[in-house]
Amino acid sequence: MAIVVNLDVMMAKRKMSLNELSEKVDLTLANLSILKTGKAKAIRFSTLEAICKVLDCQPGDILEYTD
Image 1: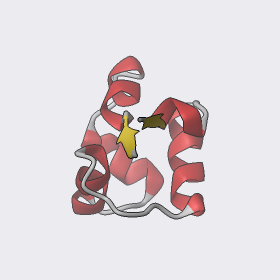
Image 2: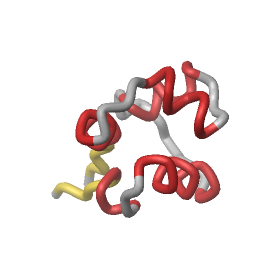
Image 3: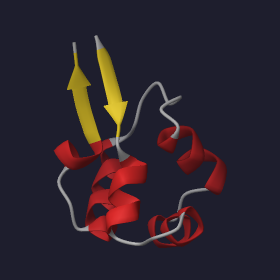
């Protein structure tokens, strides 16, 4: 089981940098970087909600399950 984080794809589609997203979501650059690279072990729903709001997307656009 693997959860793939497609945050970089959504950021590219919205032409948004990691720094810009970090400011708008009010998360540290380090924490967003960990999430973007797929090294995060968990994500809070409030964080996911904030990211989705800023990127105007659904959670399924960011997180993907692969077998």
